Amino acid sequence: SVHIGIVGLPNVGKSTVFNALSTEARAETANYPFCTIESNRAAVPVRDPRLEAIAEIARPAKVVPTAVEFADIAGLVEGASRGEGLGNRFLAEVRLADALLHVIRCFHDDNIAHVGGGMDPCRDADVIETELMLADIETLERRREKVEKWVRGDRTWQAQIEVIDRLLARLGEGRPATTAEEPPGGPLADLLRAVPLLTAKPILYCANTDTSGRHESQTAVDRLRERTGQRGVDLVEICAREEEDLREFDAEEAEGMREELGLGERGLDRLVHAAYHTLGLITFFTAGPKEVRAWTVRRGAKAPEAAGKIHTDFERGFIRARVIAYDDFIGHGGEKGCRDKGLMREEGKDYVVRDGDVIEFLAGT
Ligand code: GDP
Image (cartoon, rainbow, N blue to C red; front, top):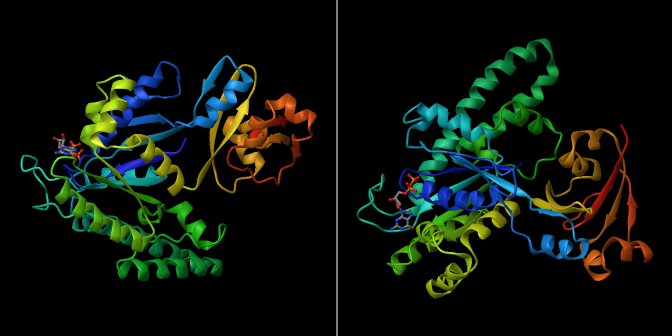
């Protein structure tokens, strides 16, 4: 499943965010064996009202949500790229993540030490991002030395040298390697497969705020928001400590308190949804008599890739897909109704899956 690494300076609330997320996951593990939990990793179910609506109609024995995995990656400090703190081990873990959730301290508390002195979210974000950029520069310089040797035997490697130099120039100006506009399959994609760059990963900011001492906290969030706006990064505001405290109450009580505190939609849901958005992910559904289930796939994926989420054999042996759009499924009483009205489409291997599609795959072996 999709894997998101939680990063940030010490004492900004990473573990608190992670604990709140994993409590959520823990509540679900009894039902969903795939929701594994380790000390610093948790698969969090994605709440989606469409799943319930489909289940109302299909009446399956089991309903299974899709999940996003979060990992708490402690140990990023200034100097990590030079191997300080847990430096290297930390960076190795960051490399494994599909995206990063960068927690930034926007709460004020004299009792909790702040590594930088006082609350300053933009400075904190800079410290972390600089470490990630320095690590990328080092990775690219090492890669360049290798590729230079290969060029002597095979000129086609020159294209990668050019990509490396372009990225080194960007990073040298203090800009991340993020290059969403690059076409897939080009020399950059080749390079990233060989050396995953940290600043090429999609990033999502999490402003950890306070409800007490609101004003100061809000000013901090506003400054951070200005920065994220300039960079086209998503920002989710959450109060990790309160989210964690609310876990002690049952759902209804927690809902009441949430209203009283003015917390709005559950911070954890907002986090999971924002992560989906940042990563360009969509959900499709399978709806049989035994099980109705939600699955995650990247936006733009074709039918065989979606089939592969269910079983790798389905991708290899893909024949075709029977697809019903979500609104049709709900509006016409499910599969039977849609079949009668000709709303169940037969699609081939080039079909681009849409968010909400209810799909049945036909595969051979
Ligand atoms: P980490 O080092 O980034 O993982 O930070 P922790 O999650 O361990 O949090 C450090 C300290 O800050 C803990 O004592 C938390 O209870 C506290 N903390 C976390 N979030 C908040 C918050 O929103 N407000 C306040 N006042 N304290 C918080």
